[in-house]
Amino acid sequence: MVDGREAMTSRTFFDVVLNQRATRQFAERAVDDSLIELCLEAAIHAPSAENLQPWVFVVVRDAGLRSKVGQLTRRAWRGGGRQHSANRLPPALLHEVDLGADGGIESAPVIIVVGGDAAIGLESTLPSSVYPATQNLLLAATSLGLGSAMTTLATLFADELREVLELPPAVVPMAVVPIGWPTRPPGPPRRLPLRERAHRDRYGAPWS
Ligand SMILES: Cc1cc2nc3c(=O)[nH]c(=O)nc-3n(C[C@H](O)[C@H](O)[C@H](O)COP(=O)(O)O)c2cc1C
Image 1 (cartoon, rainbow, N blue to C red):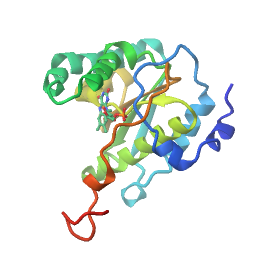
Image 2 (spheres, helix red, strand yellow):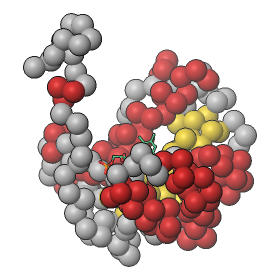
Image 3 (tube, rainbow, N blue to C red):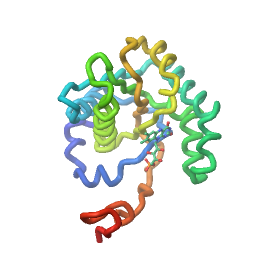
Image 4 (cartoon, rainbow, N blue to C red):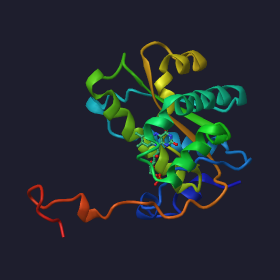
């Protein structure tokens, strides 16, 4: 078994952050709770508005529940999401999201459903408080050699997700993050060059 704390120090921050990518297909190999706990520890060290820490993590291992969450993803994708995105997504990404929606996400041994508790957090800053924690979760998974993905399709069916996971009404499901060992190396991320998005002093003045 991989020792989490050893693995945690085996990759540098920039190695992790520059190689973090979505994984949507997972090997049939268990992920120990100790690794999931490291990911959750990283998540809860994120910043949040007024330090209210309104995040909620439901760690779903039960195969029946994972399947139900996966079915919600598939329903959202096949029931309109795909049609909505198809003409904007490059074919390779469309194919990857297809694979995730058609069984890939539920094949992960762990699915973490990330929510925001509106009874704790300010409504206006709930998403901006919860997503940094989700990003920490993704980065921690990458640093441990685990595959993961930020997904939101299933959250379109918030009430169904609440019912499946018995979430209280105040908890807003915000992300569904499958975690497991990837079936293949993810390859380099596809990102625009920095100069296309960064400006110096004023918008339009090139950064470099
Ligand atoms: C707000 C948000 C929502 C996303 N929702 C989904 C989703 O529902 N399903 C999915 O397969 N990927 C989802 N993604 C993952 C993106 O497709 C992915 O981050 C992007 O294509 C970059 O690809 P890479 O991680 O392979 O570099 C989402 C990402 C973000 C930031």
